[in-house]
Length: 265
Ligand SMILES: C[S@@+](CC[C@H](N)C(=O)[O-])C[C@H]1O[C@@H](n2cnc3c(N)ncnc32)[C@H](O)[C@@H]1O
View 1 (tube, rainbow, N blue to C red):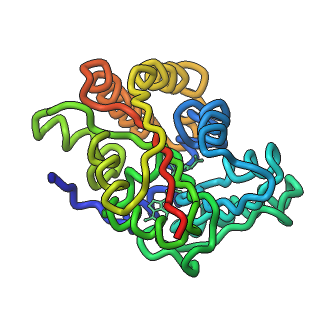
View 2 (tube, rainbow, N blue to C red; view 1 turned 120 degrees about the vertical axis):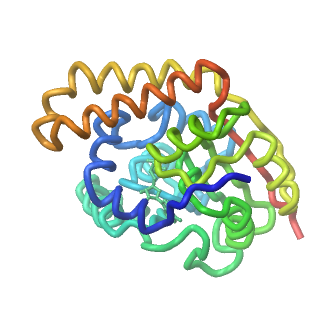
């Protein structure tokens, strides 16, 4: 599999600088495609309830963690490797009055700082694409899940063959070391012993969301982004998102949603 020479430090640096702010401006405090409706859909499929202990892997600003705690009353732990994201998530969670149920830990998804069998649900939204070893990540998710627990996630994936130049441009813009395929994630879950109880190819809605991000970038947010980060970033972002729109419209990239069940012992 092709891989780009980006590592966790590159992602941490990006999310400490303008990148995190830019994605929040485009997507909202829940930094994934589809906003809160996507969180609701994943929660319904995962069967989130008030007595669940949920681990959100790559939790960023903690928008989904607070959403789940507010909607279902569950406990949520967010894990993220970027100190600025963890600090900001903690600050916003305290301000929203959720600190009794929502906490955040600094750490790497590839070496989760939790004991075996600590959680009922391991959760992820559009972020595992940044992780340099998806199989190890799924293995860690399985380890920290209780028997009978659920893994629930969405992610950006490759859905068609593209030439090397196109692949590199897309991945370098996003700082993804590589992206999985739809079948790749399903096989990885099965190899780890999960029963894949639900899989959805949600690629068809991906281009329209990306077009909306570009529209906002070049209209309502244009002046603000130029003032805060300069015109070069605006141009780079517009070009980068346009590359993803083109690839999505050609059926080369998309998104998937998975629900897996870890067998009872
Ligand atoms: C797109 S944001 C996540 C958005 C979040 N899931 C949401 O829906 O609001 C990506 C986040 O992944 C984190 N991240 C990337 N690689 C990581 C890793 N190996 N371990 C933990 N966090 C990581 C980054 O620090 C960043 O905050």
